[in-house]
Length: 111
Image (tube, rainbow, N blue to C red):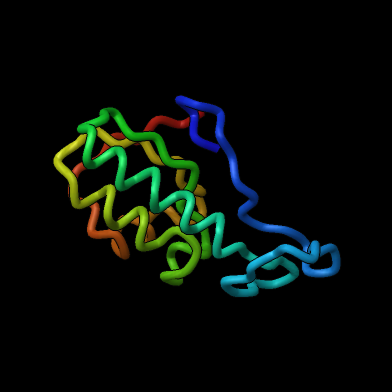
């Protein structure tokens, strides 16, 4: 979901519940991930870049992104900008996420 407009696109679904118009990008465990969902996120980031929007909020870096799947390239694109970025990261993969994404400066806010 894009927070500013509430526009949304499906990103993942249980593999045993895939609708006919689903465009699968890849499978991970019991889930199928949508090419349209990934493209939607990439389009949002391109607009953020062109309009200079800040801060940027991303939910989340998870196991997929650490394995360079899911929204990995979208998140890399955001982190290459000189912007304030807030990213939810699963605690159990935090050290690996910082390393994989080359994050040098960060503040941890535990919620």
